[in-house]
Image (cartoon, rainbow, N blue to C red; front, side):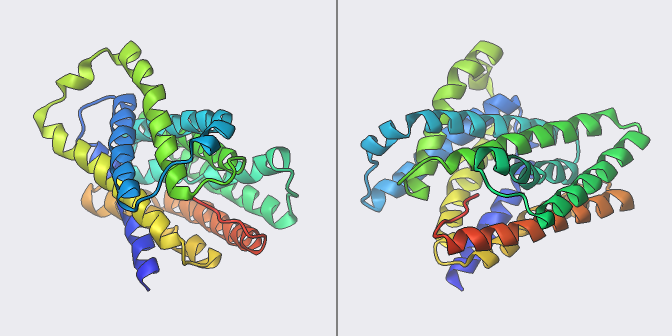
Length: 297
């Protein structure tokens, strides 16, 4: 029960990211830099308190994939935060949750996995769901919504790349891997942010500072800590089911707290998208569990 509570809490924390970033008066890349930096510091502190050490030998042997995964994580956050700026949290979340579809499509080419008929059907249903969401935005002539959805899809593509790259990183614990990836993302984003935004990050408004701390410490640090602590003792089927607490709560926040409008057509599209990825992921996680692997977020 403790593991389930930890995992559910991590999903609820992740679902509030869209709400938190709305109150940070910085660019998406600056938000990504601060969240990765603060999250890395928090998790590193936890790691040291647990009296664990990072194996630099393993870091060196996985260096290429760690750098690539750091780029993927940074791109994921930049475009996700950008998506929240242009469209509703519900739309951004649904676009982002197209990531499992990207993984299914790329798995035969990257991981040499067979694409079953069931997965092909799930991909088709997910695409129909996304077309309903996007089509409704187009019919309503909301160009910002379409741009926001596009950013959400790009964020999902980066997240899919992160998941696939993590498959090639060997013999590294999940918490240790997250610390290294957050640190790598921080180092990669620093020159990018200073070249594109200058030093405006140091001129952030006082009202944004509490939300920056929440984003870095709570949404990133505590969120990932609870996520990995909870998933250690959970079965693959439970992980698949409980993972959908994240989009469900995010959509509730969008509709009930922010009063953002979502049409019936978009709700139907979202149900098709999330339902199809859920059916596919439960199968995928069960198979990887049997082969001794663990699917991570």
